[in-house]
Image (tube, rainbow, N blue to C red; front, side):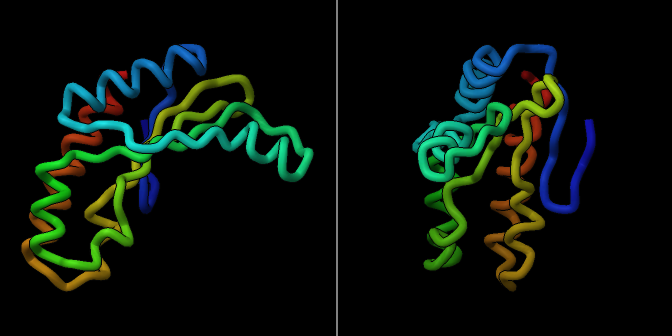
Length: 130
């Protein structure tokens, strides 16, 4: 497990498809739904004819937290939903999440900072559960 400057990541002992399913299940346990799923591998193949290892971006949303954030800061929608990624690198599978406290630190709003802390804890718990 490692913490990047802006994300939290860990290697998971699952195949890619299993990791996607488990990530969605763990997000659901934490009150998140997946609004979007972008298969970067197939997108880059179809648009640029390049091959990369499996890589997907999940747009995760926790409705009560999103509502709280929107009440605190109307333009926070520019940073929603929270991105969670599942990818393979050198044949190993990883799951990562954005750290909302870091991503939203540029916004001077105490209410938003409190919401970001709560969401971040839930996202990390989801990643640790995979």
